Image (cartoon, rainbow, N blue to C red; front, side, top):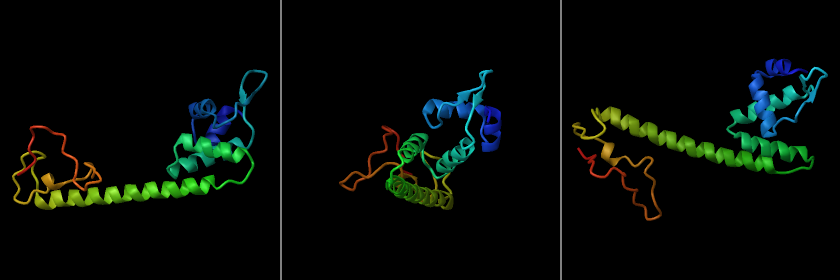
Amino acid sequence: MRSGEVAEQAGVNIQTLRYYERRGLLAEPTRSLGGHRLYPPDTVELLHAIKAAQRLGFTLDEVAELLDTGRRRHPTPDLRERALAKIAEVDAKIADLTAIRGALSDVVDARCDTLVGCTCPDCPMPLLTIGRGTPPGGEPAPDGLPGVSTRC
């Protein structure tokens, strides 16, 4: 199959094919007498697998490692272990987003009017610890905004 056919069937562009070749995700295709790239028929299926893995949150580096492991043709728990690690990442992101949503709701409910120097009576802004981290001692890290008060 030529580049255009593969790209169309896989729903990617030709530059994506070439990029994946450079990254080692796709083997370098053979060339026709005219110099056109000729991909094997299973390339479209491989591209669908790569895109599916990306939709699951795997980076291209992770996809490359998984493909390399699969190409060695011996069983490995690698995909399962990586999927479990990815689930933990997703759970952490969900927790972060839930905390951010709650904090934003508090800001909306308090009717905050500015980021610094808010005049609303119950401003939650100085109390927000999202993104500031909590070191082992349990105390949130400082704002990192010297000379700027966030207290109402």
